[in-house]
Image (cartoon, rainbow, N blue to C red; front, side):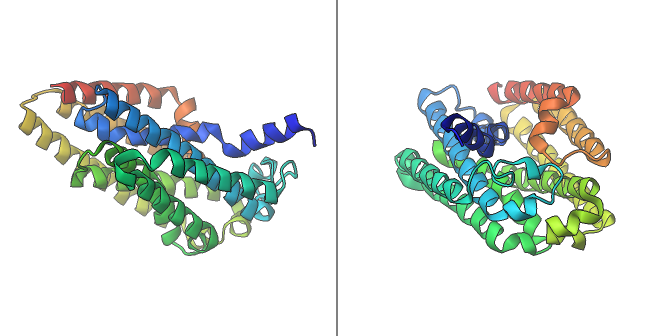
Length: 293
């Protein structure tokens, strides 16, 4: 394979599209209203880059570990390692390099605390690859934890105190998205789902629907309580409360997409669904107006 083809295969395996998930690192600093400060913005950007590198490292490692199972998947079989365009050994080496780079750029931030958060993310991801992905319920919680670590990283990088409500919203929202992903995989794979992922055969459609309902309900309730609490603290009579509307509508819209068989790739849903994008913009605008007071 030529160097250009190998580079193209490596870039595909790194999955730059999925870096959109890492915007979660901006959530806590944005909620605290510190992103207009130069140091806080730079620290948050370091956290964003660190999670891009760390996430790509996990993709290289996971694809190298799962390439045989991926060959049974109608979409994943085209991934470079499963398709034979990148060797598992090369992928593992690249993963190691990315982990080292992540440690180097995060260690100076907040006395190494950001490094600890990224290390915890990598540890859970490795445990998922080796063991947790075979344990029903634990597997979706482990994947959801990856989103929560991203949200925590932004607060740790900027030394922003994370509220209980923030952590509940992040955790429940992540569980809602991951459960939707499992539902989409079941729909897409049909009778082959068990061969691709052992836990898929353990979940019924009713059970996954129940988990999504509980997770989305907890998320919406926690955000509403947080919004009303902050509105009372800041004296804002409008914007925090108004931000509830686009948030709830976006959750309902995403639930609709899941029921239509989407949700297998959350980042692609967000990038392709104009309604979700508009709702996201409306939420950010109303939320930031509330923060700015």
